[in-house]
Length: 252
Image (cartoon, one colour):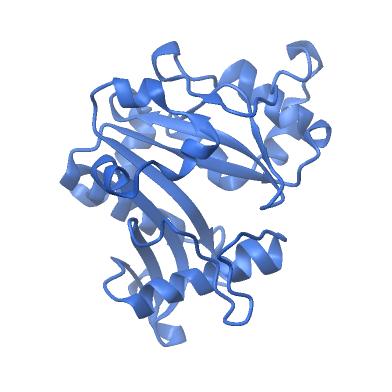
């Protein structure tokens, strides 16, 4: 589907109806498409939600040609919002003590998804440009959050997980660790099929890696969501210069 950027709009949700529109898209992707679940999922209303939603900002991508339908979402949680929530969402999966102790402004990213017809189009770049503006506005220095591989069979994911461990491990001062530790170094480096690893790595994770993103130590197998998660960490001071110029061009 060819998309015209002029019809796409990115904004923060302002009303409960807009948040529910985001939850509705999340249901279609995370529950219907990927087989996930959760205690607060409303199957009757087809809403994927959790207790953290009231504390997050919700970045929405909508298309005027579909009557303003929400076709992309991102959840954003600053450190001050996490304080109000009692924790970061991903803190149940990863020990974030190193990030908290850094004294730097933190932003957690999560629940990123796009309607199937908008994957691979300009929508994701528009959302990242809007995210860059948000980062600048709030003085964010470190971005992080869990990103998922579909399925819980880690052996089936041995090539991409091993490549992430060997080539993209976070520096020690930012190397968060999985609380229910699942090794990622499942294959010796010489046995990793790099082409297969990249093919099997979700586009979102590859996008973060191109920006200079890194991963924490160990994966987390999330049986409720039918995923294997890694924690991505991006230090804005260490962003790949070429990629960062694309990411931040909307701020100029």
